[in-house]
Image (tube, rainbow, N blue to C red; front, side, top):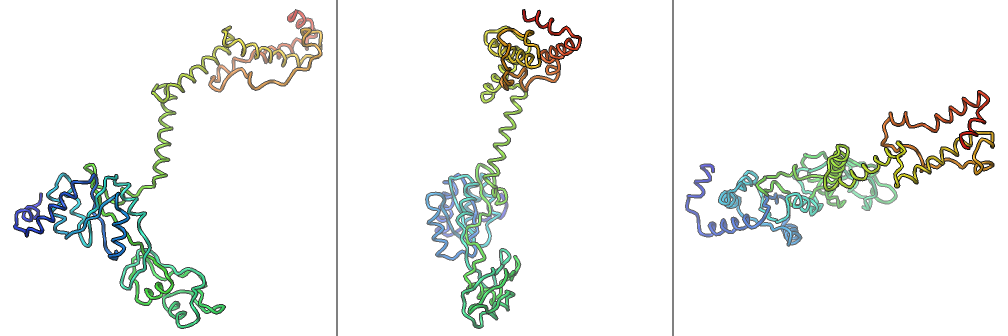
Length: 351
């Protein structure tokens, strides 16, 4: 603890200040997350509305900055780091929500408000194109004076195009403040600005809390899907991938059994279907009906069915190269046909 902090703790202070520090200390210790919020520029009425809106989710506590710092120093446990953000018109906010939820809640509660002369523009100020609804008069000159593209048209004053009248960071003049007030333009946001929040032994600043929840969720889902794919491809069993791995293994085992023509009870329907398809494909290429079994003579071969393809996607290139017995037989049949004795050979083959 710094020497200045020690001096503050050892000096004699009035009883009312001691009681206030005790209340602030109790406030800090009663919430999972405690932050410092900027109250600058918030009218008293709107501040009371904000406190009411936060009821049940967060509590706002205001006091003198010196007493807030003393309370933070007395709590210690890392929360004293918030003292660096206690300056100007600030208050403490406590919640049992997580810091990200608190930041999102405070940002959502902000409302637009008029800006006064002498204030600094938080964003570029633009007077939009359109009818102002103001009758012709000196107001058109006031608009032009602040840089708006305005003129009298059709019995009223109109802004002919979007007019950029002030850059962010520049001071608002009295003339511009009056024009914006007349038009009902409220270029600034009023709300509790979270300067920092302490939770779970970590001090968070606003830029660390301003995350896109939807994008973050999508990133987590993408990472989970990639991890699952890696687990499956590496054959690393987990509670979530065991079913997929077993299904994949069963499919690969079946593919091997079909390729090797293993006469297994579960494979027989697929083997018979494949043999039937190969036979019909061969029959379609033969012009001599007497070379075919009697049950195929005069029967037009049906189109090949997709369900009886020989190899699944998982088979390797080498397996695809070797597993073409039907095509090889067909080529041999063509060669025999060229020699002139193909019909007799096939007749003997089919009995």
